[in-house]
Amino acid sequence: ALLLAGLLAGLLLAGPARADFRPGEAVPLARRAEFGGQRTLWHDVLGRHAPHFARDRAVAIPLPEPREFAAGAGYRVALSLDGGRHLTGWLPLLPGGPAPPPGVPVLRVALEYSGPRVIGVQATVEFVDVHGPAFRRTFWESREAAEAEWLGGKWPKHLVVEYSWEERAETDAQGGLLGLLLAALSLSALVFLSALRTSKGHLSLALFARSMATEGDFDGLGSAAERGAKGD
Image (cartoon, rainbow, N blue to C red):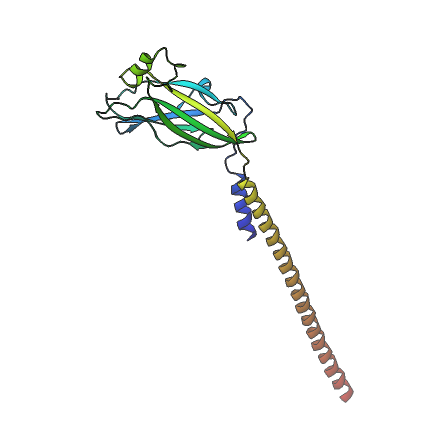
């Protein structure tokens, strides 16, 4: 039990440490793409396009055209944040097929933090009509430019990403598990020491009984010798 508790505590302590961030510090971000049944490797995103800790902001990430991208193919991206500690699913940007895209994609990334750590990430895609009131020209020179990129075939495409942050109280599951392991370790140590004391007590009694029996044997031999001498 002692060995098992010690191994579990060691594995827990040896787990990956979470990064601590200061407000406004860039959180490492990487992206990969999927198109035509192929997937790219992870590519690091520049700090100016990454989320900044506890700061709501919007950016436009340029997406270069893949070498083997075929016109009309679907295109999805996935994000990795905080050194791979938080991953999104695949996020469709181009549906592919004969149907035109429903609009210009806007990626909304909601991040949760507790203290100096990122504890959760959720990402969704919203398609915005370039001719509707919700369209923003912050990262496009004109509606025509946005339409040419996402409704036409122009590359590179600029993906608008809106980062929003929410603070939450986090239950330290790792610390709680470590506490339980330490309590189990302490209890195991007490049981072991108690068993050791008991075994020592039994050992002392056994030694005492053996010594008494030995002394009794010597006494019996002495008495027989004395009786023999008297008989002579």
